[in-house]
Amino acid sequence: MTIRAYQEQDRAAVIRLWHECGLVRPWNDPEKDIDRKLTMQAELFLVGEFEGRIVASAMAGFDGHRGSVYYLAVDPRHQHMGHGRELMARVEAQLLALGCPKLNIAVRTSNESVLAFYRRLGYSVDDVVSLGKRLIADDTASP
Image 1 (cartoon, rainbow, N blue to C red):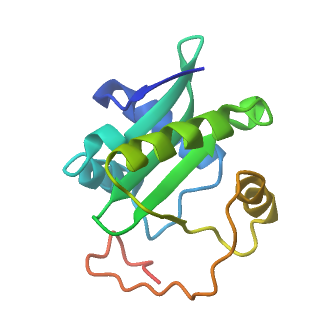
Image 2 (tube, one colour):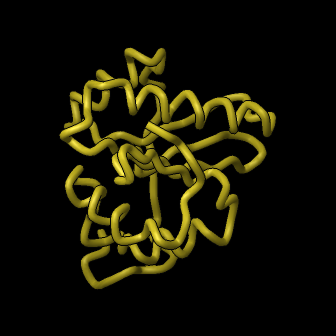
């Protein structure tokens, strides 16, 4: 797999990947999420390409205090091949180069396989509660 920065021609393939991986929710419009990401630290929006196809993605950011990763996705037909681990290693290296001291990742508590993946990479569950508040609703189904 070759890891590179997202390019606009990747849009449809990335959104298709997110749908295949179950990452899209009614309250998050993937088109808008991509548009928003491209306005800030676009170099931290990565895709993994294998034989000309987008098979992985990660959207990362750093606010000067903590890093974050969203939309980490690996095509189900390419899982368990090390692509997710490789992509996270790249994200970590890029964030470290920016001086990022800690990376926070939000994972749904019901997603045991993804929690296990991150534990294998050395991540642990922090004793915190994630809170959220929608400032801009993408549609009427916003929780």
